[in-house]
Image (cartoon, rainbow, N blue to C red; front, side):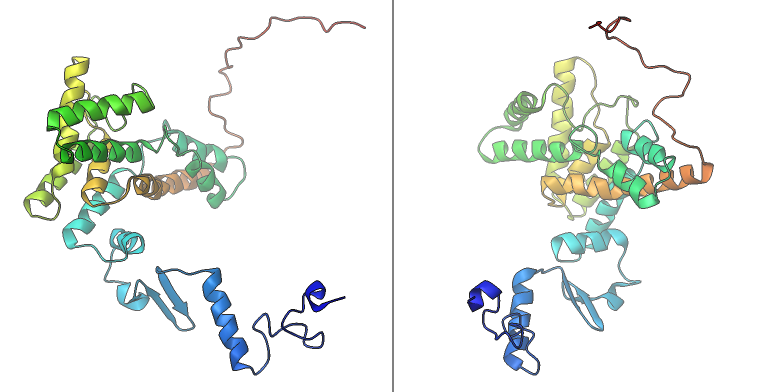
Length: 303
């Protein structure tokens, strides 16, 4: 049997082919090969970790601890640089505003139900995060896409009104009649949105952001009101999308950042439910029987 067939390429049967694996004892070349193989396996610009040293994008962890807040750290991990003070505060505001919306939100309800099934906190959290999809959790991403599309149309020569109308039409053709980021099934006016927009306006006045996407979002809000004949106010997803667009985050990260934010509420509810106890708590109380709309009672055919 050849060396190729035995897998001992680059090494003898005696040494088990360790030279090829970079494991030859006392060989500087073997150590070099091992390092090269390691670099080819994973490579990252995020963290430089070696014995006794941890650096994130060049910053030593011991220098970051106590000097950088969690939102700033999230920015650093995602963007490679630390944000300005105002940028960091805007990101923190967006993350804080979306942490929870009660058990009527499917993600929160699922976290609590999972906690009554005897699983650990991590399992309850994973179950909840896994339902943050296009309908529940993805609205911020879609709103950023809408804002960016309108901005691109303006950059292409359209007036703001033309860009908003065309952008809305394209969005509705793609996603349906519900425009992500506007309107709310519980709140006539989502109390979180005006405060977030106020912070964006203040940051724009200070030159920390352009304010362009706040203008676009408000123009979309006005166009929706004109079309519907009633106010369709911006909601939490629309307002946080303004912040993420103003800060330069790509649309997919709007969903990722929402997941990061909502995980705080998910953890809190899973932990609270764990303390409250309960077993196999379903989505509806036991006394409520689901409506059956199938076949009436019938006999199994004989023979």
